[in-house]
Figure 1 (cartoon, rainbow, N blue to C red):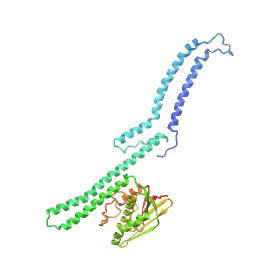
Figure 2: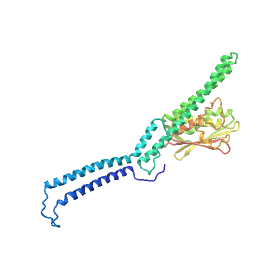
Figure 3: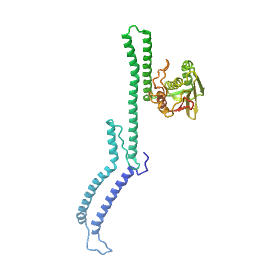
Length: 359
C-alpha cells in the first residue's frame, strides 16, 4: 500500500513525552513563582518589614509543592496511560491479527489506515506475509490434490489389470505384464518427479561452477535417440555460460527443457534449438522448439504442477506426468535465476533461463 510520508512513531512519542515534561516544568515554576517569590522582599517596591526565613518558606511552600507534585503524578500517569494506549493501538491490532493467523485463518488482513510510520509499515509487511502464506498453502493443497489424483491413476490401472488377469486365466500374460510395466513406470516417474520438486523447493543448493553449454550437450546426447525416432532436428549452439549451482539439478533442468521441447513438437518435421551464452554477468540458456500455436494466456500457467499446454504425450522415455516445467521453475528459483516463457508466432515455445554467472 502506497502511503504519504508521516511522522515516525518514535518522534511522535518523543514530542509527546517532551510536551508532558514541559507542562510539568511550567506548573512547577508557576508554583514557585506564586507561593515563594511573593514572600521575598521587593526593594524597588519598598516592601519592607518582612524577613523570610526557613520556617516560613518551608511551611508555606512545602504543602503547595506537595499538592502540585501529587497532581502532576496523577496527571502524568493518566495522560501517559491514555497516550501510550493511543500510540500503541496499531500494535494491538497487529497482535490480534497474528493470533488469528496462528489459529489457521490466513485470509484476515489488517489494512491499517493513516500515513506511513513504523507501525503501518509493520502492518503492511504482515499483510504481505499473510498473502504469501495463504497463496503457498493454497498451492500446496492444490498440488497435493493433483498429486493424489495423478498417483491414483496408475495404481487403479494396475489393480484393474490384476483383477482382469485373476478372473480370466486364459488372457495373454505377456500383454498384462507389459501394461503393468507401463503403469508402474509412470508411477515411479511421477514419484521421482515429486521428490525432485520437493528437493528443489526445500533443500539448500550446494553451489559449484557449472558450464551450461556442457550440460546442454550432455542433455542433447542423452535425448538424441528420442529426437531421431520422432525425426526432429536437435541443434546445440552457443558458447560457454558458467553459472554457480548444483550440477545435478541444473542438468535435470536442461534435460527437462529439451525433452519437453522434443515431445511437444511437430513429429517428423520439427526442430529444437538449444543455445547458451552470456549477457553481462548473467548466463543465459535458450531452448526453442516448433509445435502447435499456444494461446498467450496459457503460457504463464505452464510452470504450475500438472499443467500441460497440449494433449498428454507419452513415450517410453517420457511418462508425461506434467511436472517438467514445474521442476524447471523450482530449480531456476533455487538458483536465484529467472525463467521466461514466450510463445512463438509460428507455433511452439521459446524458453529463456537466466542464472547469475560466476566471476
